Length: 417
Ligand SMILES: Nc1ncnc2c1ncn2[C@@H]1O[C@H](COP(=O)(O)OS(=O)(=O)O)[C@@H](OP(=O)(O)O)[C@H]1O
Ligand SMILES: [Mg+2]
Ligand SMILES: [Mg+2]
Ligand SMILES: [Mg+2]
Image (cartoon, rainbow, N blue to C red):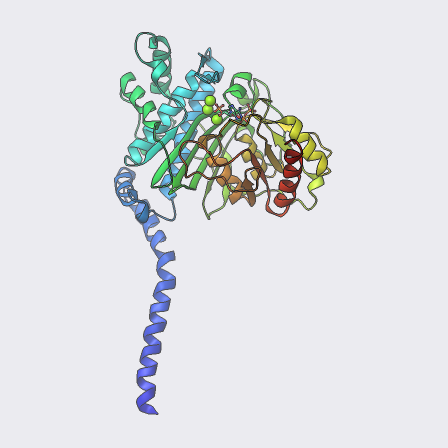
């Protein structure tokens, strides 16, 4: 018996040690990485992190540095959009699809891509705008206005600016930076999605708009940040439509940064002109009875069918009227519990949603406890390029009522066919 007992005890000990190591290492490694980030000078972090992340198989699981850069980059870009809103003629151009683009869209895109390139030079970028209309003699006037904005927009915090890599070098460099957002996207590797101003029509009207940035790894959204300069800082403020031209003047009351990292929850904090403010967790509001829901939808009837939304709401027994709000501020608003549902219902059969209009909001709502799908109930598929070509519409709701909402959506849309 004794001769059997010894080897058995040794084996058991070895196995226990191995099990212990396997359980402790995964939690220890990200902590060691975090610790080293705090101990190393900030300028040393980007290169190390970028090399480590250049292939998807070696991707970090904590995304601390990506989140930090994304938050600061979006915060800086909102300084530019706010300055355009208050001090400039918007310099609106019409794109080939007749949608508007302003000097704010170009400037914000340049600032965000510049920060991403400094920190993650090997990552790909899918961004909404391109610099074509700013090039050559015909683009000179707009180019110079955008350049003046870009070079004068800085966070009032030297360390934060250092993280972002400081200013863009020249007007020509700025154009090339804007055009770095031309990746075709897809389901492989690290790809950032940028909507420099989402809800450009809202921005022009003085309504809601959002500066949007998300990181996808192998087509899954890992980090999402939304800067919403015209939303109230307080999560408990009742949901309202576009808030009018002077709201963002009320310092400290308006301007929110929403963020989420996959598996780490969603947060919100006030926007600032320098470093990052303290964040707090946000959650969707518990909703026992879907009939009590407040739902939000697009302001533009051309972007989402308001008639279908009203029919769906009535099927669900919802009596409160909808809150119409431009941009991904809708995702942020339901994620913080200011509203309950977001309904985006196709108006035209041939319209395909763009990944930059949904990537950050999709993650923020899911991390706050919600579910985001298309009108069929399928998850949004960010693996297919610059568009969500397999999805139609968007339905975001608390998990416990989502299937009920989809049932009503299918009944209403099905009856039209
Ligand atoms: N036909 C159609 N259907 C659906 N979506 C469309 C359509 N046309 C444009 N867009 C995209 O809508 C983005 C803004 O939509 P929002 O819901 O946020 O705002 S709005 O209330 O409708 O203005 C808007 O984003 P921005 O261009 O960044 O403003 C567009 O990408
Ligand atoms: Mg646009
Ligand atoms: Mg958009
Ligand atoms: Mg846009």
